[in-house]
Length: 89
Image (cartoon, rainbow, N blue to C red; front, side):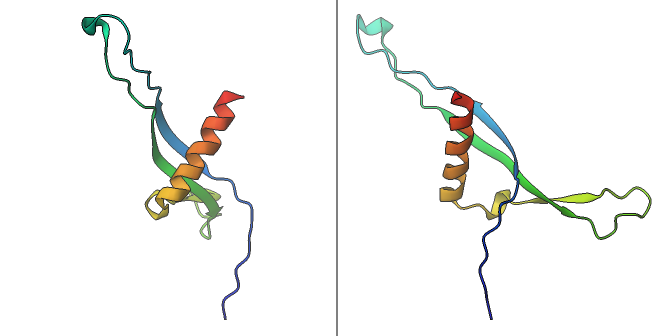
């Protein structure tokens, strides 16, 4: 049996963002140049789960589970939209 549930979780996302710039296509040719798009790359996306070994010496209460390699392109695009919309506010 399989049952799908929806839960809200907090995800820590490390990313790099480089602001692009528009092309300049007016004026003399020597002053024209192509534009560059914004560049956004997810370095890591992690959730934290309780550590079953917590309580033993040198053990953290939570362990990070890196989801980066499991994310689809669509999920990465969704994360990008969320982060960039928060940056605009």
